[in-house]
Image (cartoon, rainbow, N blue to C red; front, side):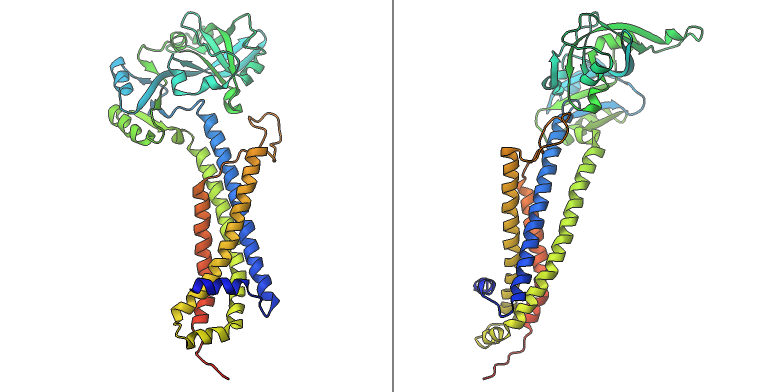
Length: 406
């Protein structure tokens, strides 16, 4: 019943226009703040999904590396134990080292990554090939798949190259001081493809055969830089990480994809929470308008309150009328804001209204993703602030002295 009173008070004309104006200012502020927050959050969600999809190209679900030093030792039996763990979909062994790539007079310092035949099962690199094909060859005839930035640096097109490239790697072990060149080992690789993921990767990575790199660097048979794993079901990474740590012990570092990029994800999450804090401040400002509107409404409806008291309404019942009035104002504003946000996001998804400046980015429009939990959190936040803002005016209304005069 008190909801009916609140609705009638909202619709009814007030004796003072200022009450209507202040009430609608509150509703409008809540609506635009809600819409702005949800649109921004949806844009952040879209960018987060885009960044995650880009990083899955190079970062596996789980990575195992040495706790100290650059390499780790894994016997065939231990590798088999790892691959047989429940929840593991695929396992790939890799070695990685800085190298000098040379094509005639053109040179580039690159991160040469030797990968095995399972590498495409733990990453999405094949989906990012923009020229040529993914082919890493074998130990005797290695192929190279490089980032487009590396291609530009050494002036080669991977799908049109007719000659090999020189690759100079550091040699492990003792070096003859009288012959500094003995510290390096030179080989030849043939470019077969190029990938485009993100500038961070495109400008430095070259993928090739793992046995070729191990032979030229003097790695032992059971020596590797990292083990990369794919899980069968997303969300099980933390559970599988614990199993791997229990199997391998403290000499190995096990990281999920989130931990491999913890700084990036932390920054993205911090930005989202920072916007939420600004939204709360805007709501608090709107709440002061709501307090003013409800306080003036209480003054105007003093006679109504006394009539209700005479009819047997207790303090709690009267308090709920004005609490409901505040919540109603907030609900109308929040509903309008959520509707505006949903329409704007849908229009962006469907028609790509807002473009991204710069032709070098992987998409040419702002990616947007609406998440139900964001809308729910906004509803709860608006409800809590509306309750807090309505409490004082409703309490004041409930404390009105019972007095009826002719």
